Length: 264
Ligand code: BTN
Image (cartoon, rainbow, N blue to C red):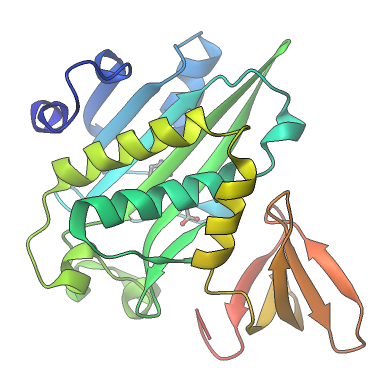
């Protein structure tokens, strides 16, 4: 599969020689963080056929069966502080939408903050993690896209909430093409990370299906209800509550559901 991915990339792509392929791995994000700490180059890309311990946000797992998805982590060493990277997950979500659109011709929506959705079901998830190194800011952007699954391939409670590019398009999906499009989109995202922030956030807000909805906000056992008003420049969700006050909520703390289900 690595060869197939490289065939879709331009011959002079700067990240071409930095692709690491794994048949099976626990988590590409976990391995990427280890490699980052050992000094791996900016633009090192880890891709796996299968993850045995795929991780999602807030300690959740991400089902990653073999032959079904694209599971990718990219090591970034941007020349800026961690404080200037608050919008990284939003940027990665827009890049993932761009990649899906380029590869299969549909543009997913974004459920704040890090889920790609289509037809009220989750197609993909993003997990960005900072690696704390002395005097340097390093980040790992992890993206998992469901490509070839049919409904029965999803296990347990996510079966009713998950979808794949194949289910959405009704066509066979070429994972190598999706992976190459994702690499290309993350590469472009990285180039525009600071200079293109405003434009990226405009696109994020346009793609974000959470905005304008009544939502429930889950923080541990606590549930609060509000209305999603906007996404601020740091990627926080601005929520208006029944008493009229607004709060910017951070994706590290809460998850969002619709009033009745995963989306709405
Ligand atoms: C989520 O749904 O909350 C985020 C899911 C992120 C999954 C990707 S797959 C590649 C990378 N490796 C992981 O363990 N997680 C990310």
